[in-house]
Amino acid sequence: MGETDDPGFARTASGPDRERPVLAVDLGATRLRAALVGADGTILARAEGPSATERGPAAVLDASEALLVAVRDAPGAESRAGPGAAPLAIGISAIGPVDPRAGVIVDPPNADRSFRDVPIAPELGVRLGLPAFLDRDTNVALLGEMAFGAARDVADVVYLTVSTGIGGAILAGGVLLHGPDGTAGELGHLLVELDGPPCGCGARGHLEAIASGAGIARAAREAIVAERSPLLATVAERAGLGRVSAADVAAAEDAGDPAAGAIMEGARRAFAAAMVTIVDLFNPTLVVVGGSIARAQGDRWLEPARVAVRTTAFRTAARRVSIVPAALGDDVGLIGCLPLVRRRLAGED
Ligand SMILES: [Zn+2]
Image 1 (cartoon, rainbow, N blue to C red):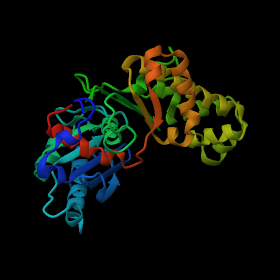
Image 2: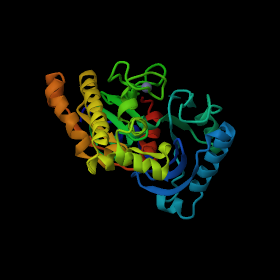
Image 3: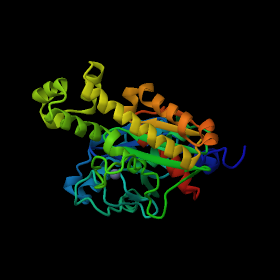
């Protein structure tokens, strides 16, 4: 097996370390989760609380430490991990942007403004007495899919998640692309429509502004205010304008509402356009698409992207690539901490 055929699993941990579990933290926009992840990727113990970034970095660090201690000391966790199998290290998956080298969460737009420059990996490492490694949630998810999911044994993979926001990650030749600032792979901010709708990042016309849950909901609010969607207007009357969700828009499309149909179609087309750019840029063997919206839409979401790539992408790259749904669900950020730890301990990425 060639160097790039083995995406950094078997060769990155050896001897007894290969049998040891890792402690995992997943800091999302709303939830803070921790787990003890066994050497085969199974979750041996888990704990969870609110991420509550508005309480400030110190409170989030304390909460993370408490959850880690809880899963480390969970009854039976050690025997399930195997005799004497103390945790190898801590892996941390967090909302970006992060500085993966320094282990610092930089300035996440989806967290409270006080939550800036948080040295989460060095802090938790000292508190738990273990090496600790951090990466952006999408990078960790890609590693999880590579170790245990849809991208096993593939060295050139692009990962996209389509939910409230749109995130991405790139593995090229078996190596995660970080860039000097750690922001490489922020594929939600690919430009798909010059002067298009506003994006959460402050710019306009980005993929996330059109095809994410937040973007779909924003377009729905405009349609309701302009009285273009009677069906969504009834949802807004019931739940409030600010609570109309992408799921409501998808349901309204299915019920035959033309404005909702146009919004969903626009989202799928924007995603398809971005996919052509992604395939042309990175020549991936595989594109793995996760996230709640992609999951709910299924082939209805992926097929327009496949057709656009087939007809519009650079021909050689288009022939190679497969576009597939993610295989791991909600736990991907926890499970991905295992390959994250193993790869970093081996000096990779
Ligand atoms: Zn943007």
